[in-house]
Image (cartoon, rainbow, N blue to C red; front, side):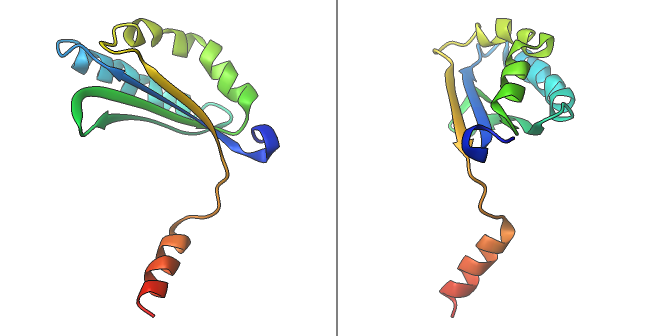
Length: 117
């Protein structure tokens, strides 16, 4: 069963790294993304940088179910990230959402073609 109501779940964490720790934090988070992404129920795990703030790091994961997301948050792998999250110069931002995927590139193509019709 997908998240509540059959929706995929997305968790986004944003932190601001101390400039002298940015590369280390990126390395640790990036090293966790591959193993996380092959975990049962994980659809996507990415580590991104904020173009508006070089020191801001975004950890973005999508899960099939809330149970799988919560298992991830309780995992040893995620626990290794907590000391780095606690280094954030600003309060970490966390947003967990339910997603209803309605399509992909076909929607983009359709919208572009409709505009030129």
